[in-house]
Image 1 (cartoon, rainbow, N blue to C red):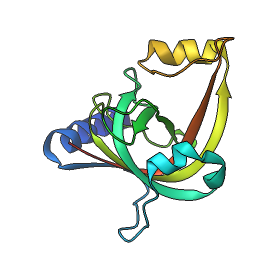
Image 2: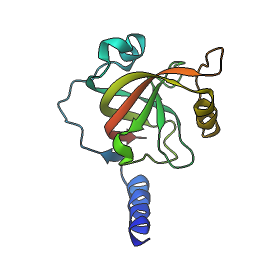
Image 3: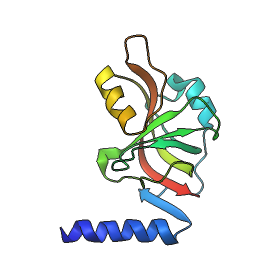
Image 4: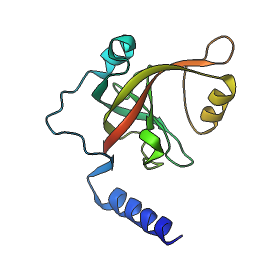
Length: 148
């Protein structure tokens, strides 16, 4: 219980007073950024590769911060679903609208209708297939930096 309270206090302090919210492993300052638009257009080119992308948080889990969706720009329709390696960290539940920089691995996955329904209940927005499933570009991040 004491660990949870300390973690929450650190989260509030970082969010309230820091310019950059950092979660997970540090992202190398000299890492080459791959265009998120390119990743979304041709995800198979980057599949299973570690890349750094930048975008805007278009939605995030409003319950715990256990996932986010990022887009190349605030008004973009296509997004990438981001989760966090080994559930080792989460993002603030108020991340929507923040600029995101993330390092991780790209994949393409299909969510069942039930998984899609669950995520929609937490704020996710996506294009559904005819059967209610969702095929999406996914990203497992090892590190994330968010700025306002």
